[in-house]
Image 1 (cartoon, rainbow, N blue to C red):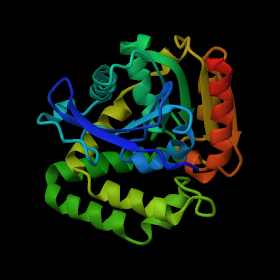
Image 2: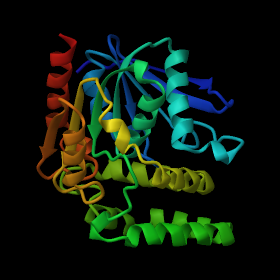
Image 3: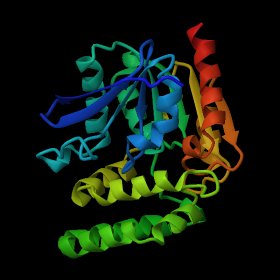
Length: 291
């Protein structure tokens, strides 16, 4: 495999927040949008594969990693991220692109499609959702109650909760616990990738993260699904407890002419668990629509 040169840059979004991006390859543009609290490394196998044939663009959301935290945390919403995506494409002078989303990235793309449908050439959804994923997660509402309790604790004693958060994320038990919850498949996903994710999320501004998470819970993009008129591929993991297969089947039913792949042994990060299978299916999807 040839080594594809990486170009990096930043730009000031609509409110002045600096957004970091990376570009590899040439050809029709693919823009990859990760999940909340995730990082560019979540797309590593797809970047390597598709940069051989396309222009692959990845970036950090506001308050994530190389991008800056907005001066006003009220601008940590799905709307703000959708505006950042639009501003990124304007900055790079891209009129249309294939937009991919993983997890929360799918929900954010729903809002972007609602605001800017003209920028979408196609969709690829991986382990995605369009409304509050905590409601009914694991068959109950404990995850939602835990988040609300955690957020209330942060509002009351932010420094203590922030310390607890970093210690919990960096604890060696965090990795197997996340796997048990369906976040990763430890038999398939590289331990290094999971460790990179843990370090990344531990380094985030917790206040900004919680603000965005709250916005995610409040936003419902269900009504947008029936309005989607571009080719759409939906991929889910059969071992994903975070966004179970019923979520993917629901989106497939709502989006006219969409395609669905449910991957055996796939966790919430199917693109890392079985990248060759995922890449092959996406390649076929792109070939069909681009020809």
